[in-house]
Length: 490
Ligand SMILES: NC(=O)C1=CN([C@@H]2O[C@H](COP(=O)(O)OP(=O)(O)OC[C@H]3O[C@@H](n4cnc5c(N)ncnc54)[C@H](OP(=O)(O)O)[C@@H]3O)[C@@H](O)[C@H]2O)C=CC1
Ligand SMILES: O=C1O[C@H](COP(=O)(O)O)[C@@H](O)[C@H](O)[C@H]1O
Image (cartoon, protein in one colour):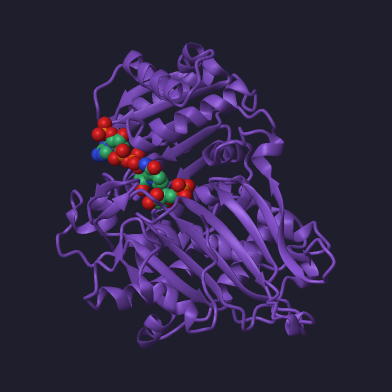
Protein backbone atom coordinates (compact mmCIF):
# COMPACT_ATOMS: atom_id res chain seq x y z
CA UNK A 1 0.00 0.00 0.00
CA UNK A 2 1.35 3.44 -0.95
CA UNK A 3 1.72 5.59 2.15
CA UNK A 4 1.83 8.99 0.40
CA UNK A 5 -0.89 8.59 -2.19
CA UNK A 6 -1.37 10.96 -5.10
CA UNK A 7 -4.68 11.47 -6.83
CA UNK A 8 -7.28 13.76 -8.29
CA UNK A 9 -10.39 13.84 -6.11
CA UNK A 10 -13.63 14.88 -7.77
CA UNK A 11 -16.28 15.89 -5.23
CA UNK A 12 -19.82 15.79 -6.59
CA UNK A 13 -21.85 18.13 -4.35
CA UNK A 14 -18.89 20.36 -3.46
CA UNK A 15 -21.07 23.28 -2.35
CA UNK A 16 -22.99 21.11 0.13
CA UNK A 17 -22.94 20.68 3.88
CA UNK A 18 -20.89 17.48 3.99
CA UNK A 19 -18.15 18.89 1.76
CA UNK A 20 -17.87 22.04 3.85
CA UNK A 21 -18.10 20.55 7.32
CA UNK A 22 -16.23 17.29 6.85
CA UNK A 23 -14.44 16.77 3.54
CA UNK A 24 -12.43 19.99 3.11
CA UNK A 25 -11.16 20.07 6.72
CA UNK A 26 -10.26 16.36 6.56
CA UNK A 27 -8.31 16.69 3.30
CA UNK A 28 -6.57 19.72 4.81
CA UNK A 29 -5.43 17.74 7.85
CA UNK A 30 -4.12 14.95 5.63
CA UNK A 31 -2.22 17.53 3.62
CA UNK A 32 -0.85 19.29 6.69
CA UNK A 33 0.33 16.16 8.44
CA UNK A 34 1.99 14.93 5.25
CA UNK A 35 -0.23 11.84 4.89
CA UNK A 36 -0.98 12.65 1.28
CA UNK A 37 1.58 13.81 -1.20
CA UNK A 38 1.45 17.38 -2.56
CA UNK A 39 0.57 15.77 -5.89
CA UNK A 40 -3.15 16.12 -5.49
CA UNK A 41 -5.92 18.26 -6.88
CA UNK A 42 -9.57 18.48 -5.91
CA UNK A 43 -12.24 19.29 -8.47
CA UNK A 44 -15.52 20.39 -6.94
CA UNK A 45 -18.68 20.10 -9.00
CA UNK A 46 -22.25 21.26 -8.31
CA UNK A 47 -24.90 23.34 -10.07
CA UNK A 48 -24.01 26.73 -8.54
CA UNK A 49 -22.11 29.01 -10.95
CA UNK A 50 -18.89 29.54 -8.94
CA UNK A 51 -15.43 30.47 -10.19
CA UNK A 52 -12.25 28.74 -9.01
CA UNK A 53 -11.61 31.79 -6.80
CA UNK A 54 -15.09 31.64 -5.20
CA UNK A 55 -14.66 27.93 -4.56
CA UNK A 56 -11.19 28.36 -3.05
CA UNK A 57 -12.56 31.09 -0.79
CA UNK A 58 -15.27 28.62 0.39
CA UNK A 59 -12.64 25.95 1.03
CA UNK A 60 -10.45 28.40 2.96
CA UNK A 61 -13.42 29.50 5.06
CA UNK A 62 -14.48 25.95 5.85
CA UNK A 63 -10.95 24.94 6.89
CA UNK A 64 -10.61 28.07 9.02
CA UNK A 65 -13.99 27.46 10.67
CA UNK A 66 -12.69 24.03 11.63
CA UNK A 67 -9.95 25.86 13.55
CA UNK A 68 -6.94 25.81 11.17
CA UNK A 69 -5.09 28.83 9.83
CA UNK A 70 -1.71 27.56 8.71
CA UNK A 71 -0.97 27.35 4.92
CA UNK A 72 -4.67 27.33 4.15
CA UNK A 73 -4.32 29.50 1.03
CA UNK A 74 -1.59 27.25 -0.35
CA UNK A 75 -3.83 24.24 0.36
CA UNK A 76 -6.86 25.86 -1.32
CA UNK A 77 -4.84 26.52 -4.47
CA UNK A 78 -5.13 22.76 -5.20
CA UNK A 79 -8.93 23.19 -5.57
CA UNK A 80 -10.79 23.75 -8.87
CA UNK A 81 -14.47 24.19 -9.54
CA UNK A 82 -16.71 23.27 -12.41
CA UNK A 83 -20.43 24.06 -12.66
CA UNK A 84 -22.10 20.77 -13.43
CA UNK A 85 -25.34 19.22 -14.59
CA UNK A 86 -25.38 15.53 -13.70
CA UNK A 87 -27.49 14.64 -16.74
CA UNK A 88 -25.55 16.60 -19.37
CA UNK A 89 -22.92 14.99 -21.56
CA UNK A 90 -21.09 18.31 -21.98
CA UNK A 91 -20.58 18.58 -18.19
CA UNK A 92 -18.81 15.20 -18.14
CA UNK A 93 -16.73 16.08 -21.19
CA UNK A 94 -15.59 19.34 -19.61
CA UNK A 95 -14.74 17.46 -16.40
CA UNK A 96 -12.80 14.87 -18.37
CA UNK A 97 -10.75 17.57 -20.02
CA UNK A 98 -10.04 19.31 -16.71
CA UNK A 99 -8.99 16.01 -15.12
CA UNK A 100 -6.61 15.38 -18.03
CA UNK A 101 -4.99 18.80 -17.59
CA UNK A 102 -4.68 18.46 -13.80
CA UNK A 103 -3.32 14.91 -14.12
CA UNK A 104 -0.39 16.45 -16.01
CA UNK A 105 -0.04 19.56 -13.82
CA UNK A 106 -0.03 17.62 -10.55
CA UNK A 107 1.58 14.44 -11.83
CA UNK A 108 -1.14 12.25 -10.32
CA UNK A 109 -0.45 9.18 -12.50
CA UNK A 110 -4.07 9.05 -13.71
CA UNK A 111 -5.36 8.13 -10.22
CA UNK A 112 -8.95 9.25 -9.67
CA UNK A 113 -11.39 9.31 -6.79
CA UNK A 114 -15.00 10.16 -7.55
CA UNK A 115 -16.63 11.17 -4.26
CA UNK A 116 -20.44 11.28 -4.43
CA UNK A 117 -21.46 13.78 -1.73
CA UNK A 118 -24.88 14.42 -3.24
CA UNK A 119 -28.44 13.27 -2.75
CA UNK A 120 -28.64 9.51 -3.37
CA UNK A 121 -31.09 9.82 -6.27
CA UNK A 122 -28.11 10.97 -8.38
CA UNK A 123 -25.69 8.14 -7.51
CA UNK A 124 -26.74 5.76 -10.30
CA UNK A 125 -26.94 8.49 -12.98
CA UNK A 126 -23.49 9.82 -12.14
CA UNK A 127 -21.85 6.38 -12.11
CA UNK A 128 -23.30 5.38 -15.48
CA UNK A 129 -22.44 8.73 -17.07
CA UNK A 130 -18.87 8.52 -15.77
CA UNK A 131 -18.51 5.29 -17.69
CA UNK A 132 -20.51 6.32 -20.79
CA UNK A 133 -18.49 9.54 -21.16
CA UNK A 134 -15.14 7.79 -20.74
CA UNK A 135 -14.14 9.26 -17.35
CA UNK A 136 -13.49 5.83 -15.90
CA UNK A 137 -10.87 5.05 -18.53
CA UNK A 138 -7.59 6.00 -16.99
CA UNK A 139 -4.00 4.86 -16.85
CA UNK A 140 -4.06 4.86 -13.02
CA UNK A 141 -6.55 3.51 -10.51
CA UNK A 142 -10.12 4.73 -10.12
CA UNK A 143 -12.30 4.58 -7.01
CA UNK A 144 -15.88 5.54 -6.26
CA UNK A 145 -16.70 6.80 -2.77
CA UNK A 146 -20.36 6.69 -2.01
CA UNK A 147 -22.17 8.32 0.87
CA UNK A 148 -25.17 6.96 2.68
CA UNK A 149 -27.99 6.20 2.31
CA UNK A 150 -27.21 3.18 0.14
CA UNK A 151 -30.85 2.59 -0.88
CA UNK A 152 -33.85 2.66 1.46
CA UNK A 153 -34.56 -1.07 1.44
CA UNK A 154 -33.09 -4.21 -0.10
CA UNK A 155 -34.66 -3.86 -3.59
CA UNK A 156 -33.59 -0.20 -3.99
CA UNK A 157 -30.10 -1.01 -2.68
CA UNK A 158 -29.84 -3.90 -5.17
CA UNK A 159 -30.90 -1.60 -8.01
CA UNK A 160 -28.35 1.04 -7.01
CA UNK A 161 -25.66 -1.56 -6.63
CA UNK A 162 -26.19 -2.97 -10.10
CA UNK A 163 -26.07 0.56 -11.57
CA UNK A 164 -22.76 1.20 -9.82
CA UNK A 165 -21.38 -2.19 -10.78
CA UNK A 166 -21.86 -1.39 -14.47
CA UNK A 167 -19.21 1.28 -14.12
CA UNK A 168 -17.08 0.13 -11.17
CA UNK A 169 -15.89 -3.19 -9.85
CA UNK A 170 -16.78 -4.08 -6.22
CA UNK A 171 -13.10 -3.60 -5.39
CA UNK A 172 -13.40 0.03 -6.56
CA UNK A 173 -16.52 0.95 -4.58
CA UNK A 174 -15.89 2.52 -1.16
CA UNK A 175 -19.20 2.70 0.74
CA UNK A 176 -18.79 5.11 3.62
CA UNK A 177 -20.00 4.30 7.10
CA UNK A 178 -18.37 7.05 9.11
CA UNK A 179 -18.68 5.06 12.36
CA UNK A 180 -16.05 2.69 10.95
CA UNK A 181 -13.64 5.62 10.88
CA UNK A 182 -14.06 6.39 14.59
CA UNK A 183 -11.05 5.70 16.80
CA UNK A 184 -12.87 3.57 19.36
CA UNK A 185 -14.94 1.64 16.82
CA UNK A 186 -11.64 0.64 15.21
CA UNK A 187 -10.44 -0.24 18.71
CA UNK A 188 -13.14 -2.91 19.21
CA UNK A 189 -11.07 -5.45 17.27
CA UNK A 190 -7.91 -4.54 19.13
CA UNK A 191 -9.54 -4.74 22.56
CA UNK A 192 -11.01 -8.12 21.69
CA UNK A 193 -8.18 -9.75 19.82
CA UNK A 194 -5.09 -8.50 21.61
CA UNK A 195 -6.10 -9.10 25.23
CA UNK A 196 -5.84 -12.55 26.73
CA UNK A 197 -8.21 -11.55 29.55
CA UNK A 198 -11.13 -10.74 27.25
CA UNK A 199 -11.13 -13.19 24.37
CA UNK A 200 -11.69 -16.35 26.46
CA UNK A 201 -14.66 -14.65 28.16
CA UNK A 202 -16.17 -13.25 24.98
CA UNK A 203 -19.07 -15.67 24.61
CA UNK A 204 -22.38 -16.85 26.05
CA UNK A 205 -20.75 -18.61 29.00
CA UNK A 206 -19.52 -15.36 30.52
CA UNK A 207 -21.41 -12.50 28.91
CA UNK A 208 -24.93 -11.77 30.04
CA UNK A 209 -25.81 -9.07 27.47
CA UNK A 210 -24.25 -6.33 25.36
CA UNK A 211 -25.76 -2.86 25.12
CA UNK A 212 -25.01 -0.32 22.41
CA UNK A 213 -26.39 3.18 22.82
CA UNK A 214 -25.91 6.02 20.37
CA UNK A 215 -27.93 8.96 21.63
CA UNK A 216 -28.02 12.43 20.15
CA UNK A 217 -29.16 15.71 21.64
CA UNK A 218 -29.77 17.34 18.26
CA UNK A 219 -33.12 17.08 16.59
CA UNK A 220 -33.65 16.57 12.89
CA UNK A 221 -32.33 20.10 12.13
CA UNK A 222 -32.72 21.00 8.41
CA UNK A 223 -32.93 17.39 7.24
CA UNK A 224 -36.67 16.92 7.69
CA UNK A 225 -37.29 16.01 4.05
CA UNK A 226 -34.63 13.28 4.02
CA UNK A 227 -35.50 12.07 7.52
CA UNK A 228 -39.20 11.69 6.74
CA UNK A 229 -38.33 9.02 4.19
CA UNK A 230 -35.70 7.48 6.41
CA UNK A 231 -36.32 7.51 10.17
CA UNK A 232 -33.88 6.33 12.82
CA UNK A 233 -34.06 2.70 11.72
CA UNK A 234 -32.66 3.38 8.25
CA UNK A 235 -30.58 6.39 9.27
CA UNK A 236 -28.65 4.78 12.14
CA UNK A 237 -29.54 1.12 12.71
CA UNK A 238 -29.14 -0.33 9.19
CA UNK A 239 -25.57 0.95 9.05
CA UNK A 240 -23.79 2.23 12.16
CA UNK A 241 -25.52 0.12 14.83
CA UNK A 242 -25.38 -3.15 12.88
CA UNK A 243 -21.74 -2.54 11.98
CA UNK A 244 -20.90 -2.20 15.69
CA UNK A 245 -22.84 -5.38 16.47
CA UNK A 246 -20.90 -7.21 13.75
CA UNK A 247 -17.53 -6.04 15.08
CA UNK A 248 -18.44 -7.05 18.63
CA UNK A 249 -19.78 -10.46 17.67
CA UNK A 250 -17.55 -11.65 14.85
CA UNK A 251 -15.10 -14.54 15.16
CA UNK A 252 -11.40 -13.68 15.07
CA UNK A 253 -10.48 -13.29 11.39
CA UNK A 254 -7.64 -15.51 10.19
CA UNK A 255 -5.81 -12.36 9.06
CA UNK A 256 -6.35 -8.65 9.60
CA UNK A 257 -7.13 -7.93 5.99
CA UNK A 258 -10.37 -6.51 4.53
CA UNK A 259 -11.48 -9.80 2.97
CA UNK A 260 -11.14 -11.87 6.12
CA UNK A 261 -12.65 -9.25 8.43
CA UNK A 262 -15.63 -8.76 6.15
CA UNK A 263 -16.17 -12.43 5.82
CA UNK A 264 -16.47 -12.72 9.62
CA UNK A 265 -18.79 -9.70 9.83
CA UNK A 266 -21.00 -11.18 7.13
CA UNK A 267 -21.37 -14.41 9.13
CA UNK A 268 -22.70 -12.41 12.09
CA UNK A 269 -25.23 -10.58 9.93
CA UNK A 270 -26.33 -13.91 8.47
CA UNK A 271 -26.84 -15.30 11.97
CA UNK A 272 -29.14 -12.47 13.15
CA UNK A 273 -32.38 -14.10 14.21
CA UNK A 274 -35.20 -13.14 11.82
CA UNK A 275 -38.73 -12.59 13.07
CA UNK A 276 -42.20 -12.45 11.61
CA UNK A 277 -44.17 -9.21 11.19
CA UNK A 278 -46.25 -10.12 14.25
CA UNK A 279 -43.13 -10.51 16.38
CA UNK A 280 -41.53 -7.15 15.54
CA UNK A 281 -42.98 -5.43 18.62
CA UNK A 282 -41.54 -8.14 20.87
CA UNK A 283 -38.04 -7.25 19.70
CA UNK A 284 -38.16 -3.59 18.65
CA UNK A 285 -39.55 -0.34 20.04
CA UNK A 286 -40.01 2.85 18.05
CA UNK A 287 -40.28 6.39 19.39
CA UNK A 288 -40.78 9.98 18.28
CA UNK A 289 -39.78 13.05 20.27
CA UNK A 290 -42.22 15.65 21.54
CA UNK A 291 -41.37 19.21 22.55
CA UNK A 292 -39.35 19.52 25.73
CA UNK A 293 -36.52 21.24 27.51
CA UNK A 294 -32.93 20.86 26.36
CA UNK A 295 -30.31 22.88 28.24
CA UNK A 296 -33.19 24.78 29.82
CA UNK A 297 -34.44 25.89 26.40
CA UNK A 298 -37.79 24.88 24.87
CA UNK A 299 -37.34 22.79 21.72
CA UNK A 300 -39.94 21.72 19.18
CA UNK A 301 -41.43 18.30 18.82
CA UNK A 302 -40.53 16.30 15.69
CA UNK A 303 -43.93 16.92 14.11
CA UNK A 304 -43.38 20.70 14.37
CA UNK A 305 -39.99 20.57 12.60
CA UNK A 306 -39.45 22.05 9.10
CA UNK A 307 -40.50 19.74 6.20
CA UNK A 308 -42.06 17.22 8.57
CA UNK A 309 -45.64 15.96 8.26
CA UNK A 310 -47.64 17.25 11.29
CA UNK A 311 -49.07 13.71 11.59
CA UNK A 312 -45.77 11.95 10.87
CA UNK A 313 -45.38 8.23 11.59
CA UNK A 314 -41.57 8.50 11.30
CA UNK A 315 -39.53 7.18 14.22
CA UNK A 316 -36.76 9.32 15.70
CA UNK A 317 -35.82 6.62 18.21
CA UNK A 318 -35.30 2.88 17.98
CA UNK A 319 -34.50 0.33 20.65
CA UNK A 320 -34.16 -3.33 19.88
CA UNK A 321 -33.09 -6.75 21.04
CA UNK A 322 -30.98 -8.71 18.56
CA UNK A 323 -30.18 -12.37 18.90
CA UNK A 324 -27.31 -14.00 17.09
CA UNK A 325 -28.01 -17.65 16.49
CA UNK A 326 -24.57 -19.22 16.58
CA UNK A 327 -22.51 -21.22 19.06
CA UNK A 328 -20.76 -18.22 20.58
CA UNK A 329 -23.79 -16.02 21.14
CA UNK A 330 -26.82 -18.28 21.57
CA UNK A 331 -28.95 -16.75 24.33
CA UNK A 332 -27.04 -13.45 24.67
CA UNK A 333 -29.16 -10.43 23.78
CA UNK A 334 -27.51 -7.50 22.02
CA UNK A 335 -29.60 -4.48 23.02
CA UNK A 336 -29.30 -1.43 20.79
CA UNK A 337 -30.79 2.03 21.19
CA UNK A 338 -30.43 5.24 19.21
CA UNK A 339 -32.41 8.43 18.95
CA UNK A 340 -32.52 12.15 18.45
CA UNK A 341 -33.26 14.79 21.10
CA UNK A 342 -32.17 12.52 23.90
CA UNK A 343 -30.67 13.59 27.21
CA UNK A 344 -27.02 13.25 26.14
CA UNK A 345 -24.80 13.00 23.09
CA UNK A 346 -23.14 9.70 23.77
CA UNK A 347 -22.12 6.51 22.02
CA UNK A 348 -21.15 3.69 24.35
CA UNK A 349 -20.91 -0.07 24.27
CA UNK A 350 -21.46 -1.85 27.57
CA UNK A 351 -20.54 -5.49 27.87
CA UNK A 352 -22.19 -6.94 30.97
CA UNK A 353 -20.57 -10.11 32.30
CA UNK A 354 -22.57 -12.82 34.04
CA UNK A 355 -22.66 -12.93 37.82
CA UNK A 356 -20.12 -15.11 39.63
CA UNK A 357 -21.53 -18.59 40.44
CA UNK A 358 -21.97 -17.79 44.12
CA UNK A 359 -21.96 -14.55 46.07
CA UNK A 360 -19.91 -15.26 49.20
CA UNK A 361 -20.84 -11.86 50.57
CA UNK A 362 -24.60 -12.37 50.45
CA UNK A 363 -25.01 -13.06 54.18
CA UNK A 364 -23.84 -9.52 54.90
CA UNK A 365 -26.69 -8.31 52.71
CA UNK A 366 -24.24 -7.24 50.06
CA UNK A 367 -25.01 -7.24 46.38
CA UNK A 368 -21.95 -7.80 44.22
CA UNK A 369 -22.14 -5.57 41.15
CA UNK A 370 -21.70 -7.23 37.75
CA UNK A 371 -18.45 -6.67 35.90
CA UNK A 372 -18.86 -4.30 32.99
CA UNK A 373 -16.55 -3.40 30.16
CA UNK A 374 -17.53 0.00 28.82
CA UNK A 375 -16.18 1.10 25.45
CA UNK A 376 -16.59 4.87 25.17
CA UNK A 377 -16.91 5.74 21.50
CA UNK A 378 -17.84 9.43 21.86
CA UNK A 379 -17.63 12.16 23.02
CA UNK A 380 -14.95 10.72 25.31
CA UNK A 381 -12.80 7.92 23.89
CA UNK A 382 -11.55 5.11 26.07
CA UNK A 383 -12.49 2.04 28.06
CA UNK A 384 -13.60 1.46 31.65
CA UNK A 385 -13.62 -1.85 33.43
CA UNK A 386 -15.97 -2.14 36.41
CA UNK A 387 -14.67 -4.51 39.08
CA UNK A 388 -15.34 -5.26 42.76
CA UNK A 389 -12.62 -4.88 45.39
CA UNK A 390 -12.40 -4.95 49.16
CA UNK A 391 -13.63 -1.84 50.92
CA UNK A 392 -10.70 -0.39 52.93
CA UNK A 393 -10.98 -1.14 56.59
CA UNK A 394 -11.20 -4.06 58.97
CA UNK A 395 -14.26 -5.78 57.52
CA UNK A 396 -14.20 -7.94 54.41
CA UNK A 397 -16.82 -6.21 52.39
CA UNK A 398 -16.91 -5.26 48.72
CA UNK A 399 -17.05 -2.02 46.83
CA UNK A 400 -17.25 -1.40 43.06
CA UNK A 401 -14.35 0.39 41.38
CA UNK A 402 -13.53 1.47 37.83
CA UNK A 403 -10.27 1.02 35.94
CA UNK A 404 -10.29 3.65 33.24
CA UNK A 405 -8.24 4.42 30.16
CA UNK A 406 -8.98 7.56 28.19
CA UNK A 407 -7.48 7.53 24.74
CA UNK A 408 -7.67 11.31 24.33
CA UNK A 409 -5.86 12.08 27.57
CA UNK A 410 -3.01 9.69 26.74
CA UNK A 411 -2.63 9.95 22.99
CA UNK A 412 -3.51 13.65 22.72
CA UNK A 413 -6.85 15.23 22.02
CA UNK A 414 -6.44 15.37 18.25
CA UNK A 415 -7.31 11.82 17.30
CA UNK A 416 -8.04 11.99 13.59
CA UNK A 417 -11.60 12.63 12.51
CA UNK A 418 -13.48 9.67 11.05
CA UNK A 419 -13.59 11.25 7.57
CA UNK A 420 -9.88 11.99 7.68
CA UNK A 421 -9.06 8.31 8.23
CA UNK A 422 -11.54 7.11 5.65
CA UNK A 423 -10.38 9.46 2.89
CA UNK A 424 -6.80 8.44 3.63
CA UNK A 425 -7.72 4.73 3.56
CA UNK A 426 -9.48 5.20 0.24
CA UNK A 427 -6.46 7.00 -1.24
CA UNK A 428 -4.25 4.11 -0.12
CA UNK A 429 -6.70 1.50 -1.39
CA UNK A 430 -7.46 0.04 2.05
CA UNK A 431 -11.10 -1.12 2.06
CA UNK A 432 -11.13 -2.52 5.62
CA UNK A 433 -13.30 0.23 7.04
CA UNK A 434 -15.78 0.46 4.19
CA UNK A 435 -18.85 -1.72 3.85
CA UNK A 436 -18.92 -4.51 1.32
CA UNK A 437 -22.07 -5.09 -0.71
CA UNK A 438 -22.74 -8.38 1.12
CA UNK A 439 -22.90 -6.53 4.45
CA UNK A 440 -25.21 -3.88 3.02
CA UNK A 441 -27.56 -6.46 1.53
CA UNK A 442 -27.78 -8.53 4.72
CA UNK A 443 -28.34 -5.43 6.85
CA UNK A 444 -31.19 -4.31 4.62
CA UNK A 445 -32.89 -7.68 4.68
CA UNK A 446 -32.82 -7.59 8.49
CA UNK A 447 -34.09 -3.99 8.62
CA UNK A 448 -36.79 -4.49 5.98
CA UNK A 449 -38.72 -6.90 8.19
CA UNK A 450 -39.00 -4.14 10.82
CA UNK A 451 -39.69 -1.21 8.49
CA UNK A 452 -42.39 -3.14 6.65
CA UNK A 453 -44.21 -3.82 9.92
CA UNK A 454 -43.85 -0.23 11.11
CA UNK A 455 -44.89 1.35 7.83
CA UNK A 456 -48.03 -0.72 7.70
CA UNK A 457 -49.19 0.24 11.20
CA UNK A 458 -49.75 3.70 12.58
CA UNK A 459 -47.88 4.48 15.81
CA UNK A 460 -50.85 5.86 17.75
CA UNK A 461 -48.74 6.69 20.78
CA UNK A 462 -46.45 9.11 18.83
CA UNK A 463 -44.97 11.36 20.07
CA UNK A 464 -44.02 9.06 22.93
CA UNK A 465 -40.87 10.53 24.46
CA UNK A 466 -40.08 13.99 25.62
CA UNK A 467 -37.11 15.86 24.18
CA UNK A 468 -34.30 15.66 26.72
CA UNK A 469 -35.29 12.20 27.99
CA UNK A 470 -33.71 8.80 27.27
CA UNK A 471 -36.54 7.61 25.02
CA UNK A 472 -39.95 6.02 25.47
CA UNK A 473 -40.94 4.00 28.53
CA UNK A 474 -41.41 0.95 26.32
CA UNK A 475 -37.66 0.91 25.62
CA UNK A 476 -37.02 0.50 29.34
CA UNK A 477 -39.70 -2.17 29.56
CA UNK A 478 -38.03 -4.13 26.76
CA UNK A 479 -35.16 -4.82 29.16
CA UNK A 480 -37.16 -4.85 32.39
CA UNK A 481 -39.25 -7.72 30.99
CA UNK A 482 -36.02 -9.70 30.85
CA UNK A 483 -34.94 -8.78 34.36
CA UNK A 484 -32.33 -6.24 33.33
CA UNK A 485 -32.01 -2.52 32.57
CA UNK A 486 -30.12 -0.04 30.43
CA UNK A 487 -26.86 1.04 32.01
CA UNK A 488 -26.56 4.84 32.18
CA UNK A 489 -24.49 6.44 29.39
CA UNK A 490 -24.20 9.99 30.74
N1 LIG B 1 -24.28 16.46 5.79
C1 LIG B 1 -23.92 15.43 6.54
O1 LIG B 1 -23.47 15.55 7.70
C2 LIG B 1 -24.02 14.06 6.00
C3 LIG B 1 -24.39 13.83 4.68
N2 LIG B 1 -24.42 12.56 4.19
C4 LIG B 1 -24.78 12.29 2.81
O2 LIG B 1 -23.95 13.06 1.94
C5 LIG B 1 -24.66 13.44 0.78
C6 LIG B 1 -24.64 14.96 0.65
O3 LIG B 1 -25.23 15.52 1.82
P1 LIG B 1 -25.18 17.08 2.13
O4 LIG B 1 -23.86 17.67 1.79
O5 LIG B 1 -25.69 17.24 3.50
O6 LIG B 1 -26.27 17.65 1.10
P2 LIG B 1 -26.52 19.15 0.66
O7 LIG B 1 -27.94 19.26 0.28
O8 LIG B 1 -25.98 20.12 1.64
O9 LIG B 1 -25.62 19.29 -0.65
C7 LIG B 1 -25.99 18.71 -1.88
C8 LIG B 1 -24.97 19.08 -2.94
O10 LIG B 1 -25.40 18.55 -4.19
C9 LIG B 1 -25.42 19.60 -5.17
N3 LIG B 1 -26.51 19.31 -6.12
C10 LIG B 1 -27.82 19.15 -5.82
N4 LIG B 1 -28.51 18.85 -6.95
C11 LIG B 1 -27.60 18.81 -7.96
C12 LIG B 1 -27.68 18.54 -9.35
N5 LIG B 1 -28.84 18.25 -9.95
N6 LIG B 1 -26.55 18.56 -10.09
C13 LIG B 1 -25.35 18.85 -9.50
N7 LIG B 1 -25.21 19.12 -8.18
C14 LIG B 1 -26.32 19.10 -7.43
C15 LIG B 1 -25.66 20.85 -4.34
O11 LIG B 1 -25.13 22.01 -4.93
P3 LIG B 1 -25.92 22.99 -5.90
O12 LIG B 1 -27.20 23.35 -5.23
O13 LIG B 1 -24.94 24.08 -6.08
O14 LIG B 1 -26.11 22.19 -7.13
C16 LIG B 1 -24.78 20.55 -3.13
O15 LIG B 1 -23.42 20.79 -3.45
C17 LIG B 1 -26.07 12.84 0.95
O16 LIG B 1 -26.09 11.59 0.34
C18 LIG B 1 -26.21 12.70 2.46
O17 LIG B 1 -27.13 11.68 2.81
C19 LIG B 1 -24.08 11.48 4.98
C20 LIG B 1 -23.72 11.64 6.30
C21 LIG B 1 -23.69 12.94 6.92
O1 LIG C 1 -25.11 9.05 9.80
C1 LIG C 1 -25.60 9.79 10.63
O2 LIG C 1 -24.94 10.00 11.77
C2 LIG C 1 -25.21 11.14 12.56
C3 LIG C 1 -24.60 10.85 13.93
O3 LIG C 1 -23.22 10.73 13.77
P1 LIG C 1 -22.25 10.99 14.99
O4 LIG C 1 -20.90 10.72 14.44
O5 LIG C 1 -22.46 12.41 15.41
O6 LIG C 1 -22.67 10.05 16.06
C4 LIG C 1 -26.69 11.42 12.68
O7 LIG C 1 -26.88 12.67 13.31
C5 LIG C 1 -27.28 11.47 11.31
O8 LIG C 1 -28.70 11.63 11.42
C6 LIG C 1 -26.99 10.24 10.53
O9 LIG C 1 -27.37 10.44 9.18
